[in-house]
Image (cartoon, rainbow, N blue to C red; front, side, top):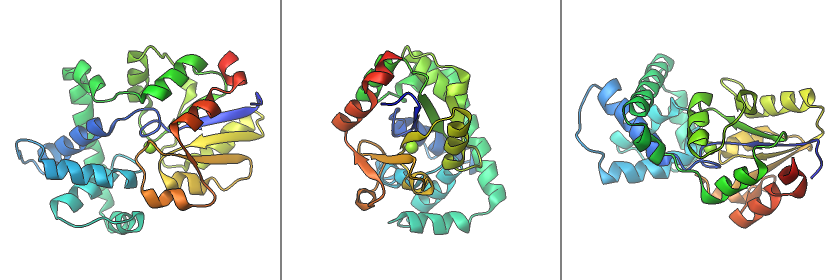
Length: 248
Ligand SMILES: [Mg+2]
């Protein structure tokens, strides 16, 4: 791999198997903080529907749409179903929920750090890859998740990371950030691994090779998109442990 090749990895569903933590934070935020109810425990049916809908999520406020759909027993069969609901959602309520979501996440982290970290395991093959590469100069984490939470999980796994290696796209597209970083680094090639098809489809640029991780939170039909390369665990090890990255 050429040293001017940059690697952009999403965090949730690529590096970190965080869906248990997202379920806890979203459920607490929705019922206890947003609706001010206490339904006791997370029902198995809620959990299953939450995991089934997890691929449609792009950022924290999207969990309001998912939780409401589950609560109203409204089926979500596709990203288009989800996006139609998202579009009709009140933006003030989405913002209010986002604050509740981060309040729930922050409270759990400060009250029971070990439990919170236990809900955020790294995928074993990605942990190995990141340990080998020592988060080399070519590698960036590109996520909608707030960088402090990412740093916390990586540190726990013995992977300290410089602040500038964690990129948060905020309201911009991930492709915007990739393009900008490539320009700043004078790079002419990038690999982009993300489990949200939408982020990959927006990176429509011959210099950027897009991969859909088969271990992430994906919909099966997304693997049929001709522009996106499905990436298995063994293929990811071969791709990311390419010699140049390993030695940097
Ligand atoms: Mg993801």
